[in-house]
Length: 102
Image 1 (cartoon, helix red, strand yellow):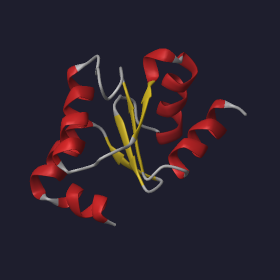
Image 2 (cartoon, rainbow, N blue to C red):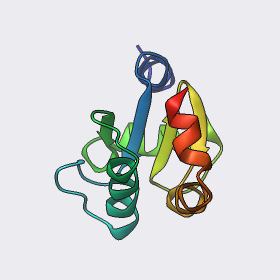
Image 3 (spheres, rainbow, N blue to C red):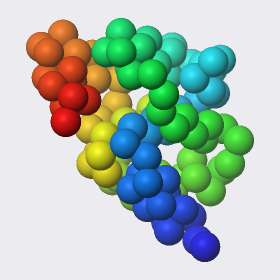
């Protein structure tokens, strides 16, 4: 399985996936920590967190897969949502909570 197929499988077999630096329990950058905090505030009990620092192929591959240059990246129900700034805006407007309810 190549990296693109692996990402496709992760995104499509988990309702919420966060590609981040570090883990949900120990984020290694402020943006990733913010993303985890927002998901927790939305009541997300469990989600797949993928540490891009642990695998350089996934780190580069996710940027190409989404055509988005930065980490973290959030996927909900197979769809790319965005990074930390977009998550913050969507959370503040209530849009993220609605998306997570679906």
